[in-house]
Image (cartoon, rainbow, N blue to C red; front, side, top):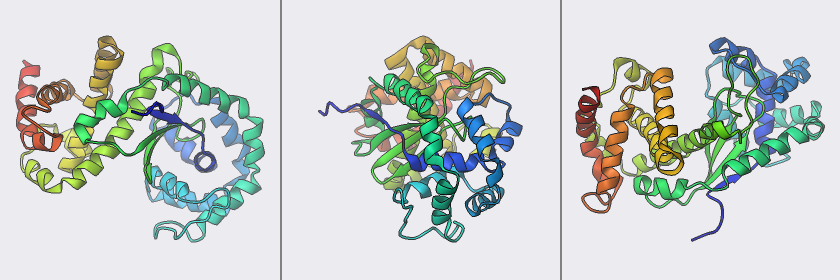
Length: 332
């Protein structure tokens, strides 16, 4: 067994470049229109610093992608496939604006972002230290192994003090899985909490485990497509609202799994109280009324793992039926 930490905390200037570029678009205003929230002082200062760059080719290209509702995950994935600092890439994807990687490189230089991050190095160093403390002892690999088998990928957590400010981004880059995560939101317009605020540790655990679990499970399901096809013949007992948000069976399953996995992890490695608080929040904020039932089904699988079931894929065909039963029991 390696003595390496389960999660590596790392700053990457390509991630910071994309987060800063978003600050120069209308993304900050759009995010506030979706839901009012307090942002980190660095995010606000970055937006102010870059207000005159809206016509820069890099920002015009990024804005056009946002206007087409392109996923921010795709933009972060693209920039992480560019070399640093020259921003070269073998080939841009068809959806990317022509020459966008070099435009981003020019934007980095024109806006003198290297100097800006140097000026702001104290807040970045503090975030890095806070996150290192949060992930000093976690057990994600051990916890996820019964569900997705041996894990060759490395987990990376990147604090994000710019944009997005209200949710994390999960991306796969080679053999590394990144959770690019803002600090925990406070109430209303108050500034966010530090990552290592004792009452807010669940924020970072949830963000990281949700993204690592999602990325690993998607790959696992793809590698076991035949079993997934068999399991997906049976509808999952989810609400019409949930189906509208997650149209495909696979999307529904992954969403249920990661939410339940976080609850299970919190109960096993943090505390029962944290697990209950998380489930209550998920039910209130996202209408995840089926979450307790999903948790009980995964608990049953873990009890029978290595006995009745040798792998999670063996359990998939019975998952919909067991969830239906668990849902009825929980609702009683």
